[in-house]
Length: 184
Image (cartoon, rainbow, N blue to C red; front, side):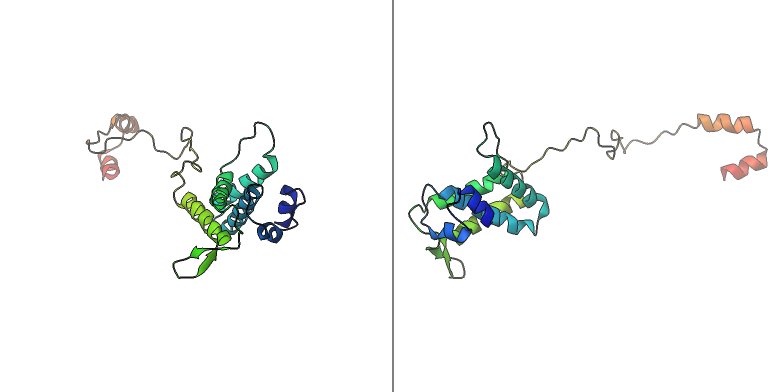
């Protein structure tokens, strides 16, 4: 994380600790939100490789190519935008100030509350990917060979055609005994 903070802050911060010591401002709120989103996705990635890995890789790619013209951001940047929007409410406050109390009565900081908000957003994407329309991938079933052919009406009585069987038996010229054994 230290290298990313240094790179995206143009050398202003050496590590994440220096970044979050400062007061939240319009200049650093974007970087703070992106770093919180990266850390949250890195943590979730350990437990859910499918969704979180795609979001994490997309966010890393977005951070490196954000300044390019006509670059379309990935779904991973939605996680960063959630963190940025949450932190924007607290411009002028330190990220380490007390935000409030959780369900257990324990005091939490603005930074921890932001992590929880981002984690909640990621959980929504993991459990219901189509809720926000972000992760859903359309699956093309046109060439899917495991699908059965057109369904047959299973309630109609099946009419079996024995004409091939009858012509084959006649061609064999079987005796009565052989025919009885074959038909038993």
